[in-house]
Amino acid sequence: MPKRGPSDHRRKRGRPPPEAPPPELAPDDQRGAPGHVPGHADESYPAVWAKDLHGRLSQLTRDQLAQVPIVAQGATLEKGGIYLNLDVRRRGPFTATGSETVRPGERYVAKRDTAREIWNQLIHPPQ
Image (cartoon, rainbow, N blue to C red):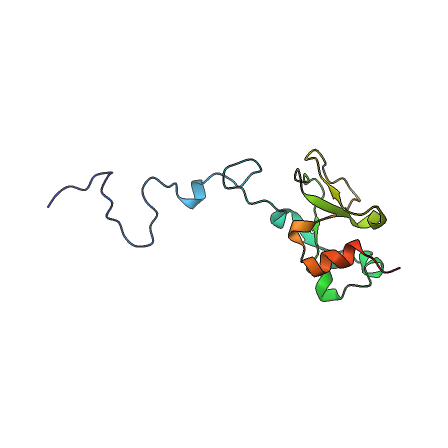
């Protein structure tokens, strides 16, 4: 029986090829890293948690508020990303430069993380 070496491509099903690092050793998904997935999924919370927004966003149902991800304090807004500050919606959406960090009391919503129907309701508040 021949010896199996590092170049032997026979392996058990479901195992990654030997040159791939195990998932626990894979590099973190950080901005600028190859394969980075943009968005704020792990650094946001649903608007439904911000009780003071319920009255100001009264055009949205409770279920819709649960789908509005607010970027968490301390997070950096992504360069080129389109955002809306929920506390001054009349200013409308803006494009981030990449140098903005969410400060205490600020509540931003990223367009890319928000369903189109809900985004449109946020940027066009009832008169």
